[in-house]
Image (cartoon, rainbow, N blue to C red; front, side):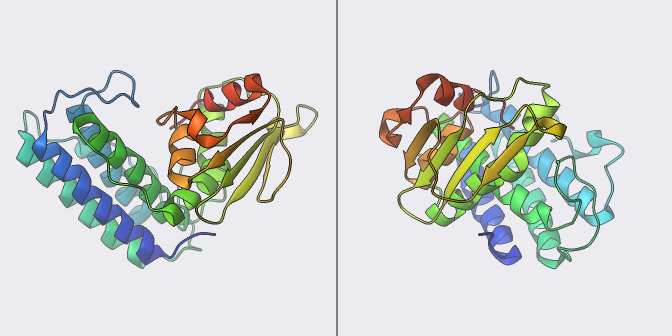
Length: 252
């Protein structure tokens, strides 16, 4: 179940505010464990740049020609960087609220190119990276169960197939079942190599997989995005190799 455009825009603003607070508290060189060798400064530059890139693409319905215009100010201190992040989030949220979801657009994902993709994608991009920013400097605020469940749905529908294709990665073998325990949401995902076009499938149903994860939506979402790897809290069952393949697949 997807949320409303206003709900997605509200989520962008709320998470951007929490992100900015983490930036102000710093330090900017704090490592961000979920993003390779990035530190908080680089993560903030990425998030603010993505907000501006997405705003441009959603506004003009085409790929931005020059992404350098979206870069953060060189040498910005923590307060300047936080203000820059918030300014981009506010402009993006305003754009997301007024989009016609059925209008043609450009985006790099393997789903229909309609503008309705943008509010959802940006809400979930911001929520996970907000969690990254807070995790780098201290305690994290929870991702609300309904938003996290929708993020899992978007992972299976939008970001997972895009990441596999972009990285030219070997798809995970076997099927994975994911089941939220604190809100609605169940999925089964698998690849069938006999099918044309990559053979990727997912369904929204209670069905047995070769491996399964069951737990709170936030923990499931973070595990799928390589963040929260305390899989014992998620009641893993089934083939451990299948589970490892899915949790090790490329993310965004």
